[in-house]
Image (cartoon, rainbow, N blue to C red):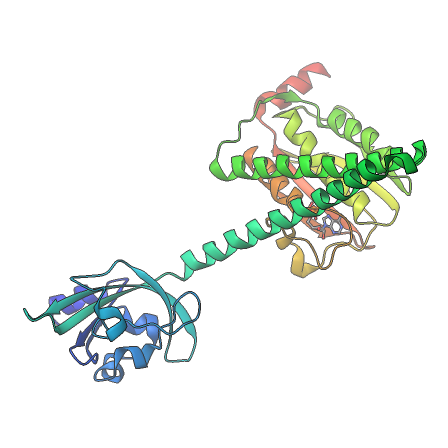
Length: 358
Ligand code: ADP
C-alpha cells in the first residue's frame, strides 16, 4: 500500500471516481465500509445502478453528473445532496454526496469524483425533531380544540344554559387552558435544560418539608389513595433549588396518583454515604423492564395511555435532578408498583450544619 492509500483508507468519507460512462473506476476511503462492496466488486459497475440513489421523497435520483437531468445543473461541483442508497446487503442508508466534475472544453464529462458521507445520525436527529414537533402540535391542539368548542357553544347558546351548566363548561375550559399553560411551561423547561440555560437558585433546603407540602397539595386530588411521607428525624438539609425539587416531587407523586387506581403512595427519604435518596412508591402496575429507561425519554408514554399528559414530566425531572448532581431511576416493588428514586448529593457543609443543630 502506498502512503496515499493509507491516508485514503483512514478517511471517514467514501471517495468514488466515475468515468465518462458513469462506471466506477476508483473505490476509495470509507466506500467499502459505508456500502459493503469491495473495490473489486464495485469497479466497472455503473455507479447509479449499483447504489440506486433515492431522494428524500423516495424518487430515484442520480449521482453520476453525466446523467441528463443533472448535467444542466452541474458546472464544477455540487453542494451536498442527501440521498438514500442501497448497500451490498440490501439495506438502505443515508449518505450526503458531493460531486466534483472534470469536463472537456466542449463541456462533456471526462470523469467525476463523488464524496460520500455517512449522515445516518443527522437524519435520525431530523426525524426525532419532526416527531417532537408532531407530538407538541398534537398535545396543544386537543385542549385548544376543546376550548374552542366550549367557548363557541357558550357564545351561541348562552341563554339556553342554566348557571350550573355554564359553570361546568367554564370549568372544563379552565382545565384545558391550564393544560396548555402547563405544556408550554414544560416545553420552556425542556428548551432551558437542552440549551444548558437552567439556573439553580441553591440554598439549604429541607426536602422533608417540600415533600410534605407537595403531598398536602395533591391529597385532595387523590381520594382513592393514601399518601404518606416517611422521613427520619433530623433529615439533613441539602443544597438545592427548592422550586425545582418541588417540581420533581410533584411530578413523581402526581404520576403515582395518575397511573394507579388507588392504594398507598409513599414518599420515603433516607440518608446514604454521600447523598440523600428520595423514593416515591405506589401500588400500581409498575414499569416494565423494557420501559425502565425509556420512561425518562422526551415525549415517551407507555402504550395507549388514557390519562392526559405530554410524556415530558419524567424527562424534565431527570434533567432537574441531574442538574443538581443527582440521579433518578425506577424499579418495581416486590409486590408490584413502581418505585421512582432520586438522589441529591449531600455536601459536607449540609451534614455539619444539621449535626450542629441536633
Ligand atoms: P406523562 O405523565 O405526561 O405521560 P411522564 O414523563 O411523567 O409523562 O411519564 C412518562 C410515562 O411513564 C407515563 O406516560 C406512564 O406511562 C409512565 N409512568 C410514569 N409514572 C408511572 C407510575 N408511577 N406507574 C406506572 N407508569 C408510570
